[in-house]
Amino acid sequence: MNFSKEETLIVTKTTKTLIVPKGIKKLICIKISLETLILNEGIVYVDCGFNQLTVLTVPNSVIHLNCSYNHLTALIVPNSVIRFNCSGNQLPKLIVPNGVIRFNCSGNQLTILIVPNGVTYLDCSNNELTELTVPNSVTRLICSDNKLTILFVSNSVTLLYCSNNQLTQLIVPNSVTDLSCHGNLLEDLSKYSELIKPKVVSLYAMCHGIVNENNIPKCFSKVDKVTCDGCKNKVVKDLVYTSYKGYRDGYIRKTIICKKCL
Image 1 (tube, rainbow, N blue to C red):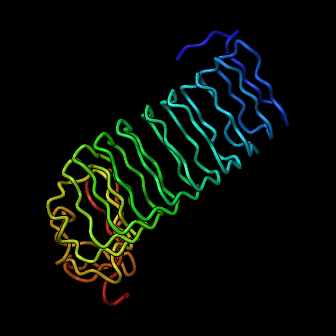
Image 2 (image 1 turned 90 degrees about the vertical axis):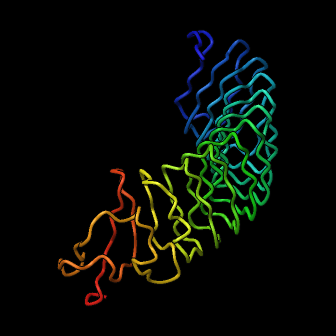
């Protein structure tokens, strides 16, 4: 979206109240301690993040809305919005516009979330969700730090971050190349034997206790011997390991503690 200088308003000075003049289509007013914002009809792009707004009325003309990190407890968003970021507020419920493509509602108090089909990027982390239906359109999903006990995702997902939930099982699609699922109740890692060389994998604290290498799929191991991070001695890979961390080289770097150091 391109806007002329006459159509753009950028506010950088501390302002308690801002009334946007007629004719302005793009507004940027980040971190100015704003408490009251009155938007004009016809505005298209609104970025009012990191302020102190408790109420926000959004005109039907808005396409891009970033109202993250305010003090909003309620928000009505028109169906015209396609890019929507309301993260870091205090929203207990939210109706997501049908036209949204990129959506971030992380860091709220949501217990229920209905995501419309068409969303490709979804970040609903740090809420109170106990269930989540993920549309087939989603390719990048971040739903960590909720209370999910079950999660199904389609083969369109390439990035999946679902750490710190209450998942007891997880089927990872072959399309996933970026996975983080630590901090759950997943005990049997053999279910992931079909996962083909993910680019980034974080398995830290994935299980209740210490996991034996025999339960780790072969795709998570590329060497016969590794070095203990404690005593620096070489240990055979089927001995005890305590945690697993992902690196961006396509392999897995394990944080290794041998039996002696343990």
